Image (tube, rainbow, N blue to C red; front, side, top):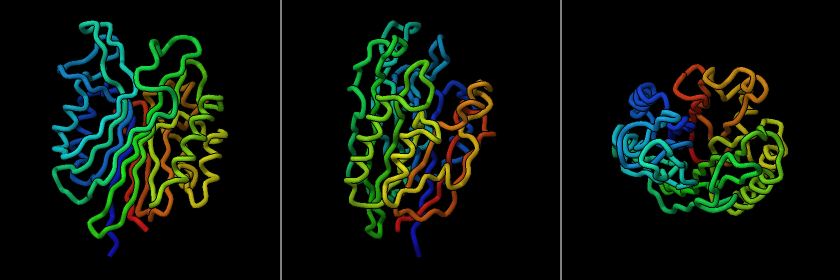
Length: 274
């Protein structure tokens, strides 16, 4: 009998709707093996930033709620928190597994790879023509029956004002990502907030990989945004988040834009390794 695993992919909006986010974790943790989060802060003190209401110790609290045995945080860029002690907050992505210490997966490799810039290479994310760093997490697991697979967690290139269409930096990022995927020696799941339109050249490059499946297109998902995202933007660019797979058996896949925890909808994937 094939072993199956449950993955949730979610841009958390920095935990701005904290009570709803905590409820979401409590509701999903018993049935989830791996979470891939984007937009998370890794500060130490409790509380929220005054400017955006972002949860400062987001990762610490998330780990406690999930009773997680393993958390991989990749620091993308210091988030300048002007309103709290004038210090910098680590801001990035996180992959969490071993929920409630189930220990049903072996982690055999973890690598954080910058596709654009380097950690803290951006002084002001809102400056004109800025290149905000992009890091991808590449994590290699083995099932307990010895089957390897990769989870790749991505928060793709963003620049204020450019939207989610084709852009030279975004295309260069995607070409580097394609090279990484071509070099993998086992089935893989690529997931996250790509910041890309469904019909962009970057998405077409990923879809052109032999054996790759774009689940957003395959399952005809109409939007990955919630009503917390401004309606004008939501109608113009309804997609940002994606899951691509190769040599992965899909048990179920869905996106829930009705869950108002973030301006992004969580994506749920139950899968096995071919």
